[in-house]
Length: 144
Image (cartoon, rainbow, N blue to C red; front, top):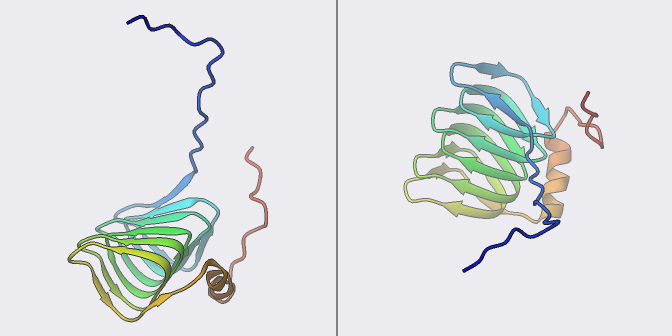
């Protein structure tokens, strides 16, 4: 078979979001609001809000609340969770609090000690107005 390079082929553009990281050994107290995705492997005491995705690693400990578009959760948490689209609870996840989600996927072994509320994206937007006290600008700040 003869393979020829296609002229003027368009390479797909890959959009990669910036990711804010809270590493193992880091403790944050307060509220975090971000346009970017967030990965948490350390400890957070307070609220975390992302317009994107949050990943909570297996060593993470959160005492407060989480709100985001999508959430992959392995760690431990005391507090409420708000997810506009999909919450994925991994096998060793442990949540002591209420969960408000549009869609949920739970692996065997994940623990939820609280109530689960199925919500629409519109209901999420209303709940977030009360959850987030540090408002983000409508458009992200331009990078220098």
